[in-house]
Image 1 (spheres, chains in turn brown, cyan):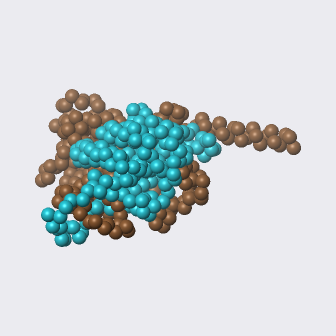
Image 2 (cartoon, rainbow over the protein chains, first blue to last red):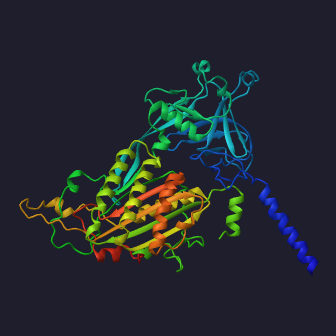
Image 3 (spheres, chains in turn blue, orange):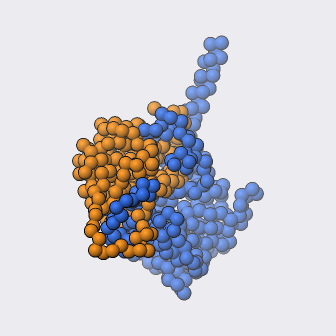
Length: 295
Length: 207
């Protein structure tokens, strides 16, 4: 009896230490910023480009690639994907590099390399990425009165990040190591050539883009400040004085709000069930998060 | 208290993100000037927000101003509420932040009075500017790591004071991931009545 207990506790301890010591397979581990206490994993990643690509490690020839500037999402059409995995894959977390002269001489074509969940696109000089430009507008949602970024129309174009003219630039050998790139500012009627920002980390690429153009790249810029209430209301309405002597009690009070966040959103319809980790003044009661309880 | 699930998440290198919302209700004739500060912070954010989005530095400075002002007005605190959750997945945390914004925004209206717009009042009517007796401020923040002062029941004055100080420190430590500030009423001249408080903010507990 005692021996069984000892045997089981040893097995349990071994299992725990095994989990603690090995890094988890990166197919499902989101890339995060390293927090002070969690330095075990050692994978440094960008603060604003999470999400590992949904593809097993390997090398896949690329047929076509497209970039959407509303959120910086790359859509890649690949060949030779293993059965069960889609041939078209999407990711916002993509590094790029140019194929070296030796690789080009050996006849290599553009390919995607996935390693440890990080996707790197190796491209030939003249590889054209389809570029979808979203023309956006700030509109007020008539139902909630809140400011929203709305895509008015899309304009197709293309982007050659490694066009020949750049080979002579100071960036030199950096071209052949994987970096995050942002396209240059969109110009309608002309294809985009080169890059607007680059960096070893996503944050660095954003910073370089910002230094060059004095404004963040589109995917970052489109995380707009949300406002509500009268903050962006037409001026005529805000200057009125309250002349009603008998306001009806069921009217909503006035209010304003604003906020921003740099958290990614998963946009998945998730049932809001009461979570054991919740806290607050109301947490002693079982909490059912539904719209109904507030009214 | 770390559960096995939390320890497991911590070991596998995930970041612990906490999203929490704080309601503070102030009452008294002298609380209306707080709206001036709140509006100033709001307009600064709107002015800058159109240029550099995703940047929490300016919003954070505004948040610090709001927290310091709230601490100065602590004799007028009447009731409060807080709620929050711990997340190990950034996507879920982001969704929750969006949900909280929408929920907070639904507690008040935009104040566009359709009657006033359709039938503009007689300009010679005497102006009556009521001073609101109540102001409510809703703060939602998201941060990385663990701050025990913010992760509990903040239904008493001392806990609330410690929490607001902790928020100010959060900004200076640079681990804020989301900031939302809502307040009601909008400006001097608008009122928040006791009935509206009870109707739209049922979770408040007296301090």
